[in-house]
Image 1 (cartoon, helix red, strand yellow):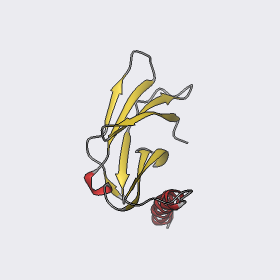
Image 2: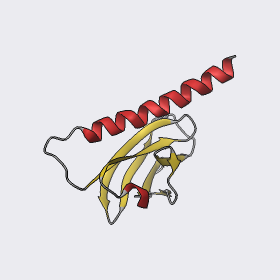
Image 3: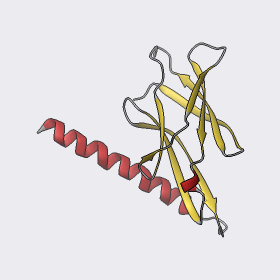
Image 4: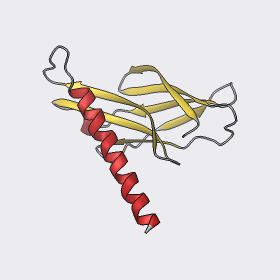
Length: 125
């Protein structure tokens, strides 16, 4: 369990922004990373707020994510690889009630689980 809750506040000008709140009893500073197609997203900013144990997280949309289709960016706690949140960019022709975004998110999370499982197997053998 990561010990944080990340809630989107807005998404504009190519930057996803959210509020990260530490759960009670969690005093460690956050280590937030984002990835797109298993590659790191550069330019992630975690800024202090006036409130203790709250941070503003900004994740820029990577240029590679802009194109036809559905693309998902994962935002994770780097310490335990838990997904805190995600956002999807859809460009080109989109269908009404399109489930491609959900499928893309499931694929990204499945890839994350596969990596964690393989790491666990390597460490326990």
